[in-house]
Image 1 (cartoon, rainbow, N blue to C red):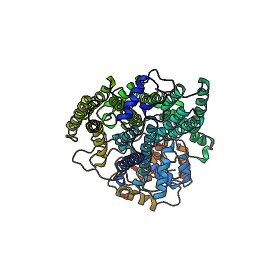
Image 2 (image 1 turned 120 degrees about the vertical axis):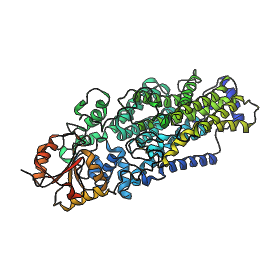
Image 3 (image 1 turned 90 degrees about the vertical axis):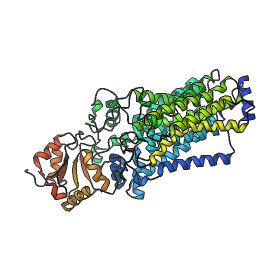
Length: 639
C-alpha cells in the first residue's frame, strides 16, 4: 500500500487528481514536522497509558482467568500447559496464550491485581502505537494520528485494557498482522506475508478461531492488490496460510504429542484431545447445533453467552456506546474511498487500505450478528478497523474539501451525520453526563456549518477552527464514555467489562463499588478460615482440596498457590477425574477434602463424594452455615 498520503498517490496521473494535488499542496499540509508529529503521538500514547493504568490496583480481574494466572505463575509445567491449579491436573478451557504474559508479570512482580492487568495495559498502548504506524504509512501523518486517537478513546478498548480477558492481546496481534499484510501488498515480498501469517497464528493462541476471521479479508486483498502474476500471488498466499496454520496449531500439537500421563487433562473435552478443545468446545459446539461436537463437553450457562446478537447488536443500548460512535463516518469513508478510486490500477494503495479495514469491519459484524451470543467486549476487535477508516477517511474528505468542487460537501455531511448518530446512541442514557448531548450537537452544528460555508478564499484559521469543532463533535462522546472507566461508579464487570452506566458491572449512580474485586493474594475472611482449616488438617496429601467445578476453586486458587483438584473443570461436566480415579486418590492419601456446591451439576465423581465422605460442620471452619457449599472429609469415610 502507498507510503504517501491518500491524495498524493504517485500512480494517479488523472487530471482530476493533479488538480486536487496542487490544491492540497498549496493549502493543506496534512504532515506536520517530524518533531511536532512525534510530540502529538507521545501525547496520545500518554493519554492511552493514563486511561488504561489509572487505578489498576483496584482492577476487577476475571475470577477464572486470574485464578489460572496465579497457578501458572507458580509452576512452569502449569505455565506451559495452561494448568488451572499449580499441579496442572486440568487445563483452563481455552488455549493459554493470552494468560502467559499475565503469568510472567505475576511471577516477576508478585501476586496482585495490578500485576495481572499490567500486560493488558502494555498491549493496549502498543496497539495504539502500531495502528498509528500502519495508518500513517497508508494515509499520511494526520490520518495516523487521528486513527491512534480514535483507538485510544474507544470506550470498550479502555474498559478491556483495564481487565484481563484475552481480547486485548488478540487486538494487538491482529493489528500487527494487518501491518505486515500492508507491507506485503505494497512491496510484493514474501517475508512480510509470512510474518502476517505468523502474527495471525499467535493471535490464535490468544482467542483461537476468532483470530482466523481476518484471513479471508487478508487473502482476498493480497490477491487483488499485490504486485506480481496471479499465480505468484496465489503461491505466496499458500505459504502464508501454511505458516498461519502451523503457528496456530503449535500449542495443540505440543499437547497432543505429550503423553497424557505427563500433562493436564484437557478441559471441555470428553476425549482429552486438545483439538477437541479448540475446534469442538470452543468452535463447532458454540456455533452449530451439536453441543458435543468432536467430543466436546456440552456448555452450561456459565460457559456460554446469550444475547447481544442479530443485526442490531452493534447499536443496542449497552453495546452501542462501547463501539459504534463513529460507525457512520467509517462506513461513509469506506464507500467514498473505494468509489473515488474507481478506475485506478489494480495495485492502487489507497483503495487497498480502505478495503483492508472495511473488510475487517464487515466480516466481524456479520459473524457477531449471526452467532448464538456475544459478550459486549467482543466488539473491541472492531476498534482498529473503525479507527483506521476514520483516520484515513477524514484525511481524504478533508483534502477533497480543501481542493474544492462537488466532493467538498462530503466532509460536512459526514460530520453532521455522525453528530446526529452520537445523539441517538447517547439519548437513552440521558442521566449519564446530561451536558454531553447538547455540547455534541452544538459542536457538530458549528463544525458542519463552518465547513459547508467555507470557500477557497476563507481564512485558514476559520477553516481549521471548523475542522477542530468537527473532530471534537465526533470524539467527545466516546471520550467521555471512555473516561467513565476511571470513575468508581462505573467499574465494569470483571467478567464482561464495559464502560459507562451499562452492563452487569454498573453499580448505580450513587453506589461506590468495593475494590479490588476478585483480589489476588488477598482472600476474604471466609476463605482465609477455610484455607487455615484445610492446611491445619493436611498431613502430606498432594491436593489441598478437590472442588466441584472451577466455581469453588477460583477464590482459593487466587489466594494460595496450593495444588487443588478441580473436578469437572470450568463447567463441572468434564469427565475428570472419574469416580474410580477419585477413589484411588483418596485411598493413596493424595486427597482428603472435597468441596461441593449446589450451583453446579452433579457428576459421578461428586456423587461418589456424597456417598462416601463425611460432611464437615461449617462451624469447624468459621462459617455459620453451609450456604451453597458443603465441605466433605474423605478420610472419615465408610470405605
